Image (cartoon, rainbow, N blue to C red; front, side, top):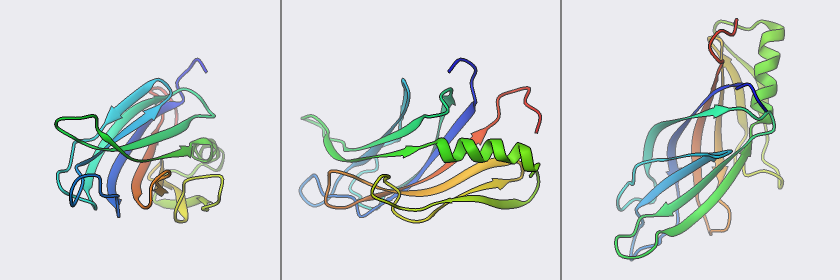
Length: 166
């Protein structure tokens, strides 16, 4: 767990069917955690289907890393309300990054792996991991846990550390 495996860019694209935590709506934001790093999106006021389209960056050091998301409703006068959480194992993404170097995929777009929803993960729809012009990218919808409804769409890109040959 010493040398960085790369830079992980997590784009929080949007949320769908998030739960109501205020009178008629919610003011959602997302906290994304990887290891001991965390980053937060902006708050979208009065919206159950927010569009953030915000890129957050992390240093990926652990090949068994798990990305953790927590969604909250911003409140002005009391503690923020929980709107669900989700997690995603990054092992499939990391294995595709290694495979990409072996098969030498460098241009165009090639799907190298699919991740299917199952009871052991928070994936809500089939997710693809592709090599897009030499970069490994995963598009994924995550089902929020511990709430009645809600999904978050992410685009995750693994960027090689500086000095790595493609």
